[in-house]
Image (cartoon, rainbow, N blue to C red; front, side):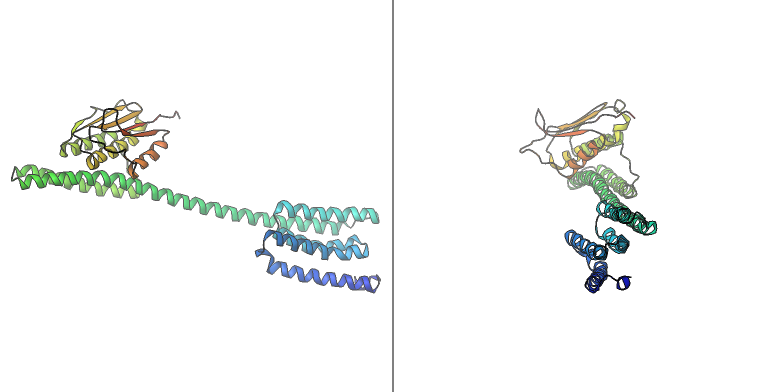
Length: 335
């Protein structure tokens, strides 16, 4: 059509050169442009529109704008859809206006070709981008779930083993002292039996933690605290019951008691430990010597995270009467 159009040799040659560059640019864009920078991709698309639209401008014929379907497809591939879709429809609109202005007749099949290619290819790339975003979102959710589970297991194991191993160490020391002093071996055997029970309990707790079915009870933790403190020679002042504590908070308060008592056994020279509870709070204090301001470790950090999950807060540090104080408060949010 270009050669047989009778447009004269110069314009025909120039149009053929533009078409050749258009074809070469199209192949170049398919192979190399997708990995280029955004500005370079925009330059490639602009060059394709320039080469593809040259015959229409040289011959003054809007029919040749239909050749821009390849440039539109490349634009949809290389540019964001918010730019490439309007560009494709603008090209179809320009062809329609040009046809009406030049001859008053519209080649609807040609206009429909430009509009249809824009809509079809744009839809394909939109679906492709959406699928890619969904895959990325699923991968992000998977990574977050794995990280959350790792944090949960690490926190649970710290809470379980830290308390139980501290109690075991105290009981082992007591049993050793009894045996070394040749005192009543029955007391030593009682401590060894308690150690055996603690070992079995720790193993069961670890298994339950890994499987995600472990639950902590405030009443159980208070009972365990009584035994651990008594074995360490620490006088314990504990609440008679936990009935006044909100049922929804007894689990997280059980963790508070466990961690605070573990710290008393590990780090304190306290002779007395006092635990008080209320509907939405729990407090653990001791009369040990605090020479420096304690730094929160993994256990207290884990407690802060647990309390944050129930809109609570944790306070810890030197008590007003000496010793160390751990105080937790939370509120039950109405359903």
